[in-house]
Image 1 (tube, rainbow, N blue to C red):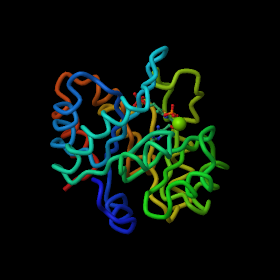
Image 2 (image 1 turned 180 degrees about the vertical axis):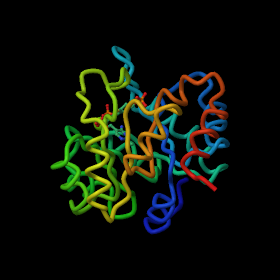
Image 3 (image 1 turned 45 degrees about the vertical axis):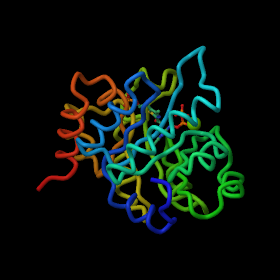
Length: 220
Ligand SMILES: Cc1ncc(COP(=O)(O)OP(=O)(O)O)c(N)n1
Ligand SMILES: Cc1nc(C(=O)O)sc1CCOP(=O)(O)O
Ligand SMILES: [Mg+2]
């Protein structure tokens, strides 16, 4: 949703519960529209196909598609890894992992308005991300080993419990191996926000999958 200022993005992020990462796909606009209609609050372009990384122009084209769909659904648009692409795409969010650009470097490129998120995989990283200047939200995981991030060992739900117990002032999300069946365990561990990939990208009906996840995250 290009055009929101930093405060507006941060307010929307605080209300967000369901964050989806997806690669490019032939039906990207339709898929994203269905996921957002089902209740996804934030959508990230994360294209990590082995052997065929997206060229910058391809990534920008996919982000233009996602930006239009996000604008129709009042959802936030997130870019993975690359500050230059986030800026060029007018994205709301840049997500950085532990091995990506240092946050101060990304902030110098982005300025103050774009929200920055950080991945964390242990208590020390989560504690640091909760306090690091320039970071707006963080993710903890993987909750379970996941083929979407091969080779990353899983701290599991103990990290979610420890993060919840620390009651960080910043929004945080649990990630990794989360699906509809496992979501109750994640919520019981203290998370209120989650990031998913396969639970929606591989669902036979992405809208229905998002609707069920969103309902569980926003109980009436
Ligand atoms: C919202 C969100 N959380 C975590 C990640 C993982 O980031 P990273 O550890 O840098 O791994 P890659 O996704 O870059 O492979 C993410 N992308 N988004
Ligand atoms: C992209 C990513 N980052 C993780 C982390 O722990 O930082 S786990 C992960 C993959 C999550 O995919 P799925 O929902 O298909 O298991
Ligand atoms: Mg990364």
